[in-house]
Image (cartoon, one colour):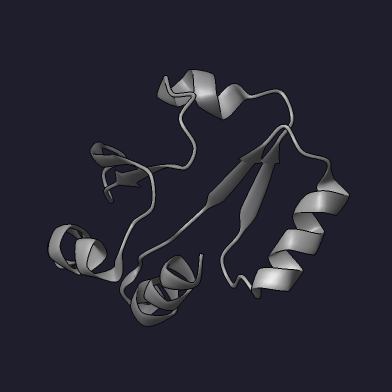
Length: 95
């Protein structure tokens, strides 16, 4: 999460948005985690697992890059490095 936090901090001014989705955990647990990690991007709580169905995934963590037109451009399963974000996401931000 520190990588995503840092990247969000650097690129939010260019319209880049991160929305974390936590599925299946109670709101209090999620709030504690957000506070512990010092997250600066929003986290949505999804107790009904609707996001898993919408994105057809049960793998955690999963990440999706949705462009300004609402199209899913990239999908990752697993951790994301700063190098991956710079290589794959920055060019889409700059479009």
